Structure formats: structure tokens, C-alpha cells
Length: 329
Image (cartoon, rainbow, N blue to C red):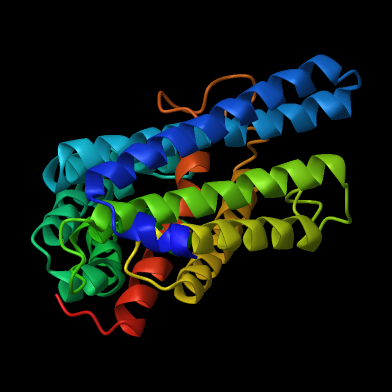
């Protein structure tokens, strides 16, 4: 415990340097492990499990890199970065959904009004307003705009898909950079560590789940959606991710127990978010995020897979933190 107290007393620069060595070292070791596993895989099921593990690992590299960019560039550039991620993720989501000409106005509203306005509210610290802007105002605006297009065919289904896409790709993901702006007493200018904690524990949980599913095949919860999602694998991922969050409490304003609880909440939400995205892909007839009937889904191939866990975990994590610590904007 004395070691953790010492680490907590380090400057932000010293802490970030240590995290850099730890995280990229672990990712490098995991990448080497994945290479060894590929060499040993002989049967088609083994190859498939290794490829799934590699995909989760690649996602981890992506999100860790996003964190470092957020740390170096500051809050404004981070908002732009996550805004672009939301844009391309929403584009991919709409590609998977059934839309008609009558939806064009709603889609223009989603891409060029709702998305930038949501991130503007986040960037200006309008926490209360950005929390309700999409679920309340946009929820009612989208069907009104669609109804004015005079196209009633599959009206409810089309609007529900657009609203769901906005919730996942814009609303959920916008909560991640909002963590940079939370203000804890005595914890100024260190919001990026909260973003790091969220990304690290969620991706760790997914990696562990993928690894357990490969080495300890258990009865899947919903085999029609995912043959790798089982309560045992998911539970192992959540517990390991939460334990890692507790070990990293020294970079946060939390105590060890609080860090474990918040990480547990984030890992659980992220795990189910990833699972729900698999269900969405199956509904769209996509077996792989990389290909649909042999062709890439969009130019931002597989982005939905990469943001799904974070889009579910970020709002749950942020509002849990704000509620428990009674933070005000």
C-alpha cells in the first residue's frame, strides 16, 4: 500500500510516463502471445478463436492510442477526435440499417445538427443539458421530421433504428470525452486519467472474456447471437477488469474500493454493449464486422465493434461517478 501511496503523490507527468511503460508493455506481450497462438492453431475453430482474440487486441491498441492523443492534445482536440469517431460510426450504423428516401431529412439532422451540437454541449460543460438533449429533444424531433417527409412505410422501424444509432454512436460515445471535464476537488487537470481508467478496464475485460472463451469453452448464453459469450467468460472479464481498476486507483480521485466498484460498473456495461452490438449485426445479416456478403461494410470498417463497449460503458460510468461523488457542472 505504501507503494500506491507513493505513486499517488507523483506528478501527472511521472504517472503518465509509468502508465505508458505498463500499458504498452502489456499490449506488446499480449501481441506476442497472439502470434504464438496463431502458430499453434491448427483446426478451423482454433484459428477462428485466435482471430477473435486478435481483433479485441487490435481494438485495445486503437483505444489506448486514442487515450494518448486525448492526453497530449487536450480537451478541444479530444472533442473533435471523438466527434469524428461518432460520425463514422453513425455512418456505418446507417449502412447496416434499412432507410428510405423519406429518412434523408432525419439523417441530415442527425449528422450535421445533432452530432456537432451534442459535442458542443459537452465541450462547454453543459452536463445537465447534454445528458437530456438526445434522449428528450432529439427523440421527439426525429419522427416529426420523418413524418413531414410523407412516407409512412415501415415508419416506426425506420425511426427506431435512426434513434438507436444516434443513442449508441453519438450520445453514448460523447460521454467518454466528457470525463476529461469532470472536476474533483484536488484533482484538477487530470480528467484524462478517468478516460484512461474507463478504456483500460473495459478493454481488459473484453480481452479476458475472449481469452477465457477460447481456452475454456462454456455454454453460450445466446448461441444464435454469439457462441463465445457465456456467463463464465463474461464474469471472468468483469472481475479481472475491475481488479485492474482497483490497482490503478492511484491515478484517480477514488479509493481502491471505489475504483473497483466504478470499474465493475464500467466493465459490466461494456461487456453487455459488445454483446448487444453482435445482436444488431446478426439482425442486419452481418456475420463479421469486416465483411457483409464478402464486401466491406463501410470505409470505417468494424468501427461499430470498436465503439460498442465504450458507448455503453461511458454514460453509465460518468453518471455513476457524478451521482456518487455529487459532482456539479
